Image (cartoon, rainbow, N blue to C red; front, top):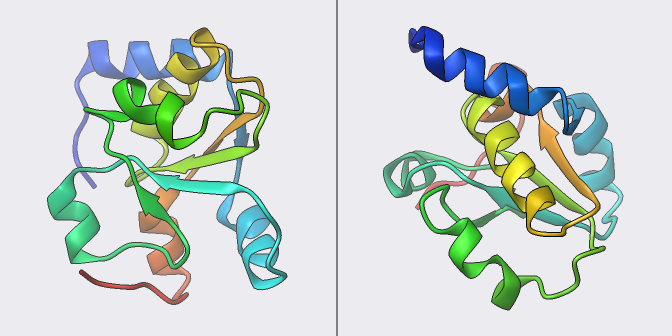
Length: 124
């Protein structure tokens, strides 16, 4: 796991006071049942290509705020975000809420927890 700088962690912890979080154990059964929600991987393109969770779409942290309104125009749509471990997705969730999105959730543990659970991943 990457060692995070103090100021980054401070920023993440502040964002986490304002965002809803879930775990991989909340999301996996919903995917298995085919429930409807937007599932977005906010990691870097290289991380996405190396492996991602099935059904997810890629909108990296660097562009999601720019592109979200065209991709998901309904600000009340349920959006579950994930990254490597749940820090970047919390920052994105906070920003989307500031943009008016009202049903945004950050998946704590992210791709790392999903992969460690031994659940399916896709590559490419």
